Length: 264
Image 1 (cartoon, one colour):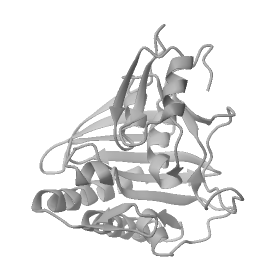
Image 2: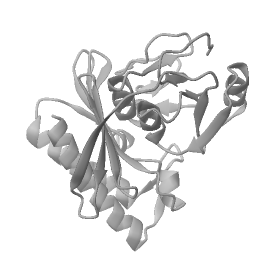
Image 3: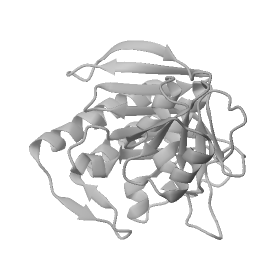
């Protein structure tokens, strides 16, 4: 399955970069979030790969959901696809945007890939093994290195969303005596935790499952975890939610190595 994810992500990344370099227009979806031709082309490519190799596994994909195409995944394993996470970074010509594909089993992201085509790097996670992949200008993988979270140092380093930081985030950083915080867009925050470059990523803002699943799969495979503010593991396939839309996430905290005496 991961081989299919890699092929799909690399092909989607190539299509995204073609749009990125050629220029593009931006439209707004019903929820007022931006969308570009790159989102749509990448999602079409990814779904074509998934449908060809795994025709019996449904996919929840961001742009299809926006168009009202939502398969019933209750009680089933399924894919979560965000063809272009960090659309705002893409629009503002920052290279942090990513392609995200994840496989969900029993509510847990067990296989995932996060690919940042403009940076030439990808991250994968499956069966307790996380890897960092270097990708050349011909969209070929040139190296694979195993990665893992680090044990937390005395002073924690945090990651925060560039576009969605708020007072709750600042309060969390203060309460947990975080010594440094780096702002970065997209699902790359999960991956930086997974490779031991930071310790915690608090998210006090709305996200959808396709935003987080692939990065969460990488982080968990590297030895980290993603928990709600109540301390339970973040789960996927959340439908019929009384307080929010299907597939919406609650606030969450991502941890690298085992936390010691810190509070969410």
